[in-house]
Image (cartoon, rainbow, N blue to C red; front, side, top):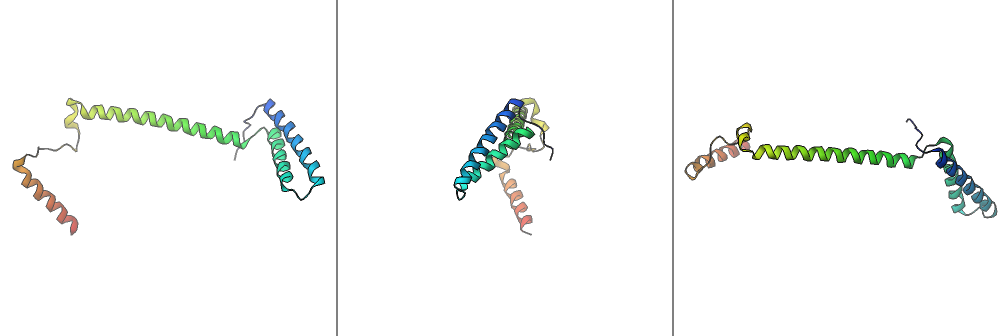
Length: 130
């Protein structure tokens, strides 16, 4: 995994300062009450903030950046897809494009030849049953 710096210098300095403050406060409290787990969690959080400031990389910021990038790509794909659907619908309903589709029926079914259609459907179902 390639880690790239994703926070600025001022943000890093604030993280280091707040992290050391949290670490000092929690260790002072832990010396008086070592059985309290909350102070241990605050110490771990402060150490994490110090490390983020030194490395200038925050995994949460990276996660949000990747999520925004993915959402923008998805939005772009949806817009492109909607445009393609609109163009396809225009081509489908335009009068000069009717013969370009393979699924268009070759002949219209009228009440006179519906018996042929029913027999063709029945033959197709019989072949599926075999």
